[in-house]
Image (cartoon, rainbow, N blue to C red):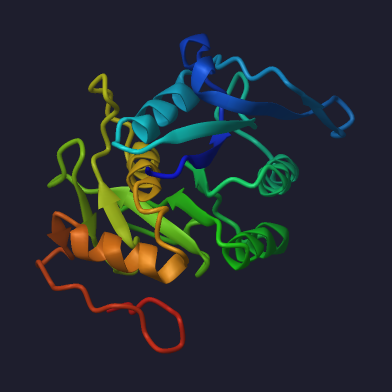
Length: 234
């Protein structure tokens, strides 16, 4: 029997029709004095988190969702909210954390939490643009960066292993909406959930690399992890 995989999603919440797939939820907001406040309601006002959840659930695996809401009326948040959401998801013992977002600056607290997640065997997937400067947390070595790949249909993915991203996937939601790297990351998180039966980080990534529909932008073969534990970068 395939194990149940807990996927934590840091986003704008989910719509009510997905609540039966959610085992735990919490929102992280700032009050007028910039103090953190939490609640257990995660109604999605933007639709972004619901599309992300749809993409995660679109792939054949047994998934339970743990929802951390950091977006409310706009797709903007703070590092304090992200850090609190990450800490909570680590306490909730999720297997995968999906962050369909990117920050232009490198924040030590966020980096340390991503490193901690990897040390605990939790895979962190984050969206990265197909071109341009690094964004975070996708730019951290401990994070699986994902971007949109126009070659990929729904259900397909690519092993890119370049400066921008490790994996690529469709940038479309299941209803046909084009959401860029945000939705590609969610697809990768959903596909990764199917590999959770492998015991640790590198076997999961190795099997995913070998199973990819496309290898690199020029169809290069899977090279495997280097001896120092880092994935090779061409």
